[in-house]
Image 1 (tube, rainbow, N blue to C red):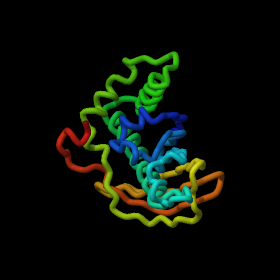
Image 2 (cartoon, rainbow, N blue to C red):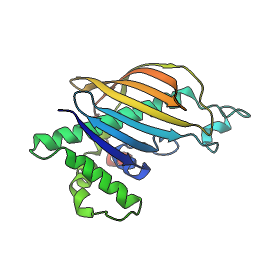
Image 3 (cartoon, one colour):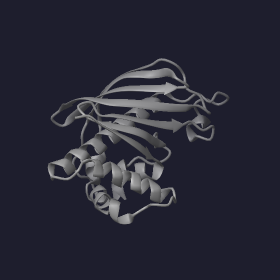
Image 4 (cartoon, helix red, strand yellow):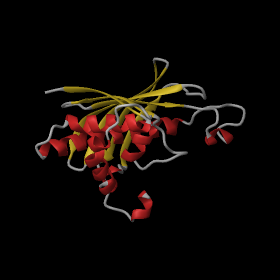
Length: 204
């Protein structure tokens, strides 16, 4: 059965889900998530003129590197895989998988200093996120993405990623990046679903 969930998560919650940090954090916000045979996630990144990369790419022209758009799609895919995996794990233990979404949304309330935040609602998920951080690192196995239009400072990139196949320790995603309703990149990415545990300081 297909389950849709409105999910609005900011950078602080995203930092709990994946290890990427500035200046290589390419996802500012998760805007929606849909569970089902074909899990789908929508996210976004605002490209600021203050990005360090513009010091060299290129002086006098704030042209966003295409590889950064691809990296944003990869990070969005990783976020999708992590949320879906936690829902599957919760369900396998006999719990309501929607509790994962509720816990994430509750965390967003807390980080945004909004009323209604309840620490106990997210406690189990936060503990699990911390103790299984090595499972949150996906490594690219294959990238087939075409860059169709340039992206410039001041624009907002929207990422739409859908998980199409699971193959043992690999996941395949159909990905698309849009700016102002125009497709700027589109293709298919395959990544590992996790990597072996690494030394703790890497995730500190």
